[in-house]
Image 1: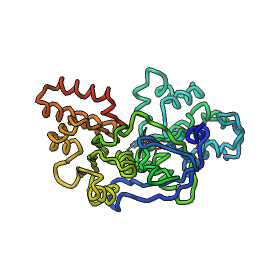
Image 2: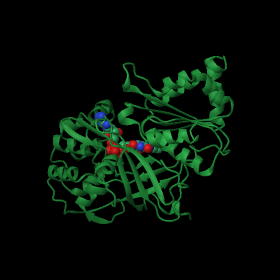
Image 3: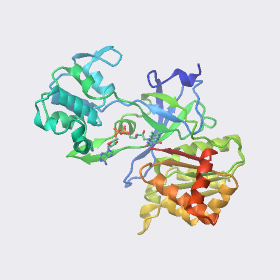
Length: 379
Ligand SMILES: Cc1cc2nc3c(=O)[nH]c(=O)nc-3n(C[C@H](O)[C@H](O)[C@H](O)COP(=O)(O)OP(=O)(O)OC[C@H]3O[C@@H](n4cnc5c(N)ncnc54)[C@H](O)[C@@H]3O)c2cc1C
């Protein structure tokens, strides 16, 4: 068994944090961090892979739940493997209390079949209402609004799901950083329903993972997001925000291996002065000739918002010329809007460049997908 396979989500490696730095400047609306973790000798990854990180819930969040349920935390419970642990530990590291799901509401309602408010939120008939209720809420909101339902701490294993790892695209090449894995993490923070909240894993990495701390991690292969086998093949990478992560890994790998293929990166964020992640490194790569083109789109730096897809449109002729030369095209980052807009801009560039119809562009792109020349890592 390889070292990578030795550590899994159920048997993670305790990695030590060696760097945890803010990439965004003060005043930015985002908090994006660069995090480095030390690996055990023999652990290996390939550019395009991700690292799975198992977070723990915040102490304050655990305390709030204990208080709302009326337990001390010293109670004994059996975890998912039937190992006896304290209820405090269960809430800290085993149970999803930071995100509320419809499944949790349904289970909670089963324990209190006579509570009217819960009836209105549970079952298939109330799916939409429950989904709306879940948005921006955590288990504490449910426990506070409908108290007295949990009478035995063990019931929490029935109600809420297991605390699961979060994936982060690897931002480094192991060829340049032996024994290390690096990531680019945006810390999720928001206010909702009169509470200040944070993402479980990104909050953990942002606030409770100083240099020297350990985090349970595992490496997660992704064969659907790979540099071309031929080092001479050009690549076009579109990675706004934390979508930059795997492309930093790609570029480092190409630098380390002396690959001759051309590299073109589209990066976008809100403001150049505050949010240009890895600016010095990327500009250095342009100087060194590693990056043939670096096109940036800072949406809030001018009145009219400009995004990566707009930059693609401006360069559509050259983009098509690269595709015709066999370039591979990669997209990483936001799945909800960005990836769709980039897809449309790409279709447009193909249609314009080939003087063809949209149908022809779609067929061209489908062929690229089949040839593994159009790869996405979106979340
Ligand atoms: C393959 C893959 C690669 C990834 N790579 C990266 C990466 O490189 N960098 C990176 O930062 N992330 C990456 N992610 C996302 C990452 O895995 C986590 O999903 C992210 O960090 C949030 O996790 P969390 O535990 O901090 O938040 P969670 O505790 O899971 O909370 C997130 C939830 O909070 C709620 N929420 C968030 N904002 C609001 C709001 N404004 N209002 C109301 N509710 C809200 C939503 O329900 C949301 O689902 C990747 C994901 C995948 C699948």
